[in-house]
Length: 293
Picture 1 (cartoon, rainbow, N blue to C red):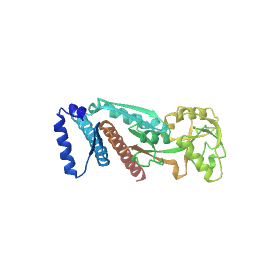
Picture 2 (picture 1 turned 90 degrees about the vertical axis):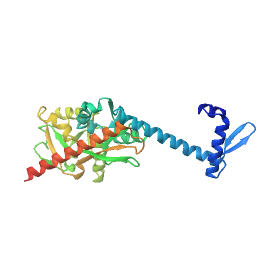
Picture 3 (picture 1 turned 90 degrees about the horizontal axis):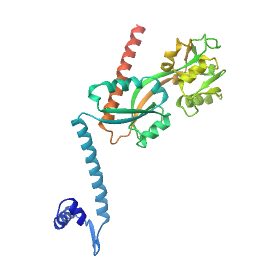
Picture 4 (picture 1 turned 135 degrees about the vertical axis):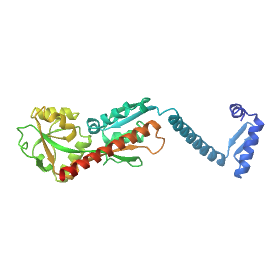
């Protein structure tokens, strides 16, 4: 009691008076008194827990408001899958960081497979995560981001190279260059094969999409990769791209985050990514309508 009074710059008698007044207002005893000091009653312990929650909420509000008052600043850690990193995310983040309004914000990006993206955000190791929207987000908030499509990439001499569209079943008759078993793409392919009592024939397993495309270029096998990842290599390496007929080949990504205590810096980055995705989807939709007309 004496230490608390000293920290609050109060005399002990004033502190005791305030506690007595609070107990009177609530209609319960908050402290049990002993010769050696005091101990909270059950009601006092419950009040203490609520008071700590209130103080923590106050601190979060103060941090948020000070961020807006001084111009948003801080560091945002983001977990993303290899597909997202290889496609539009880097450009979206670069655009965000070049804005003068975000000069005091730093963004760090770490590559993870989808389950680790979700786990990292849930555990508080990253403020934001981006992965395929089939992930088990649970109690996390999720917002639509961008989309892509899985395609088959082959060497020009491959038996499927002259086709423009194939079913996934057709690919299972041939060896494949695969990603690690815990990657989202590989999990989806394995499930699709198992659903028809087939399996993927792994010729070689590589750690990233560029390595997969290099293996295809060497005519080791075909590979199923995101179309946007493959496009920069198609003409230079003379690779063939074949559309997968299955609906699940169209993939949608989502931004996830915890619903509590998202910092101002993380909030503005999230909003920027969502807005960019909406604009890109709108442009693509107008282009499809124009081409269809």
